[in-house]
Image (tube, rainbow, N blue to C red; front, top):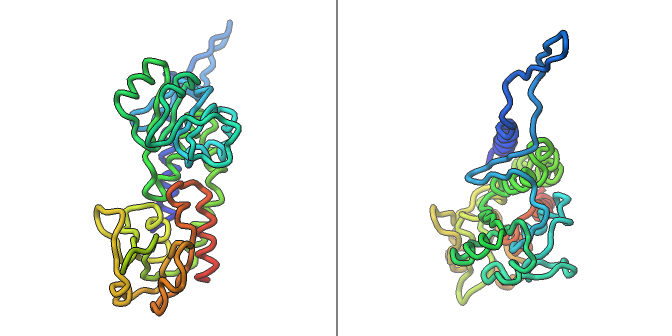
Length: 295
């Protein structure tokens, strides 16, 4: 993982999007006074902003979130006052109404609350999208990030929506600064181990990351996931198969125990892997734990 190149590319994209978000202004605007014509540089406009197929002409004033991760990101970006409702799986937001789960949103409740924007990491049924559209609720679907760069892009996109082209870069950088520093520290550690990521045990085996998820992507800063495949997210691996691998590290969920993985010739680092299912910049804590164990 060439982290410096990845982050530089993301920020370059944000900068270009900021430039292209200017309103239709001539390259030089003429200001006419009684006696003098003065050429001035164009004034950068905050809106509209665009990314992918999405364009926003102004910042939404009210938002409902069906994603625990997106809810947390809204708070990290200083946008908590915009939230009028959250998913029932969003922890620590008891003061806000809940509108169902990501898989089963309460469409009627959302329509009654009438947010300008609904943000989600789970696709909304087409019939429900039509109902929401007819009620004036815009739906923004942001895919669950499968890598660190995609996580950064979500912060950038949400910053652009709510802060516009002028201020979004500063806000996104501030929210990502800690995890940026931690990931660079991990890269500079110079560790290169063969590893696997074990989520939980089965009879005679374990479920593990097959490499197409954010856990594998971020932990690859420490080496190579030996179970990586091209198109699968999960793999099933037996204890015997683990014994035969040339493993340096096992990243194991904290629910597992030494008894589950005893006698394996590898360093075992226990982590709360469930945090990768709700990815935010708070994943810097997990990477910090790994740095401490591998230093």
